Length: 336
Ligand code: HEM
Image (cartoon, rainbow, N blue to C red; front, side, top):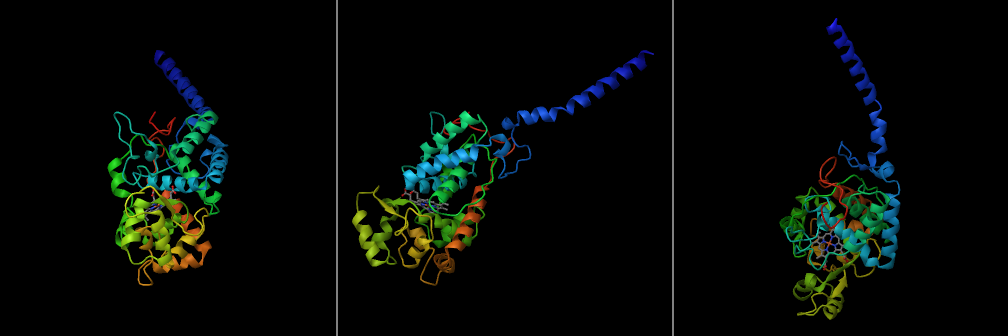
């Protein structure tokens, strides 16, 4: 008799547990904005329910800032690249050094060179007010890069979202994996190959140099020592970039339209007006293995826009942290 009573009690308990669990989904939906995506896939609609105004907020802030200072658009595009090529697109590049932690900002390719950190902090500040601890810094970087390109007249692409932020950074990887402007074509192909990109994709991504500027220290040896520099271009560059001193003096990477995201960079290369040694490596007078791509992009801006957008999507997908990995930082500059 006592046994039967126990059985009935267990049954009733089980039924109530099962029926209670069937209402849990609506409760989790209610708080879902703070719960990571357990399936760990990036999706362009990731913030649609979690923070519906996130993308519009990033776009408004970035577009206003870029139209006010057009070079900032270039700087934000580069920031996303330097993030993704070092342990994936996880906002590791935004972590500042402190007494116990060394980040990537003082790595050789970044120090005194990367720009745009403050506007990312501003976007993050606004988003934390709107949807606390929902939008990752890594996603902000990816969307800011796309919105910058669009603001400067370049192609649009759908950014997949749901990246989470790292709790670590890697100074050594920043020094070894970010390509140097002194690389030859073989080295460039290898550096991008290491991240899964073909030589053609490397040529398309390099088209980012159709906007922005470089310091004299990065191109000095080219304009004083190399023969494949158009003669008048060399003369004008030597006026801004002396043989000694003036390391920080700037010149545009695209000599004709440095504030417009177009295909002029490839036209520059085909007339030996590449600013960086590494850029001119992509075109070698008809005999280089990537010359045909440079010529194709110089002729067809639409083709370049398409290939660039696809390569950017691929770059944005480099080993993201998803699901329960990493965290959503409250401040992009430090771990929670
Ligand atoms: C192909 C290998 C690459 C090399 C060797 C390289 C190197 C450089 C160097 C030396 C500068 C000038 C930095 C300075 O003087 O402060 C620069 C600027 C820039 N890079 Fe690259 N880069 C490469 C690929 C890329 C890629 C793939 C992107 C983006 C998708 C990119 C985006 C930019 C932009 C937009 C600027 C101008 C930044 C500004 O004005 O603030 N670069 N790059």
